[in-house]
Image (cartoon, rainbow, N blue to C red; front, side, top):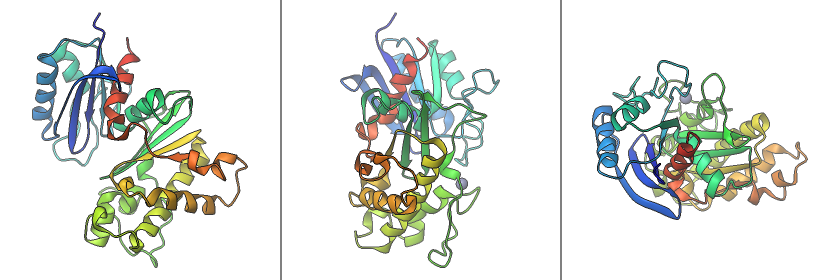
Length: 293
Ligand code: ZN
């Protein structure tokens, strides 16, 4: 059997393909824009077809997706607003075209697996990986494995308090308007303030509002799931001053309610940035591939 794994991260904007076994052994990696399903899948097939066949391929995909192996539409993207991708088959196409076993999950669950195996989530079996970028997504591991329920977590679309006197912005989510992603994604920030988040100075009120929304959403996740650690990544979090503001606001909102040191004085060790940076997703796809071999 081959001693390498394939990793695929199909993000809403970029697609990453890699061959290897982990962060210290990425033998080949290629990145290209996510365009139509047909064109994108063809490029993924091409990447693997001209290299030694991996033992298995892990795919972390933007969602929502069907992750139920017993479902006839397993491995499909489902109700995404991304044009052309509604009900697109991803995993079955790659499995059949490349004739290798394929594991399939959300991009954020894959990233959570990567951080759990090699990064900021080592030894933390109940783990949340949150990404705040174009959208908001949360990968959740329970006992070191992605949380499986009726579908998968879509924490980015939970409703959070929205004080319209402070923030009259209606939100950008095409399905819900002012859900968490609708209010606090990078897309929401760019529309609300009419410029990309990276162009907003540190002292702009945008950041205090962003910290408020992120703290509210994370608090909801902590109350429901009680993860051992929350890893917070994504493009919006590139702003170095933001995570400390989120930690501070999180503690204020928690108001000492849970008596856990990590949620209070240990907060810097609880809400942390990813250790694998923007490679968490594709490395996590390797980890995902190992679950089926
Ligand atoms: Zn939504």
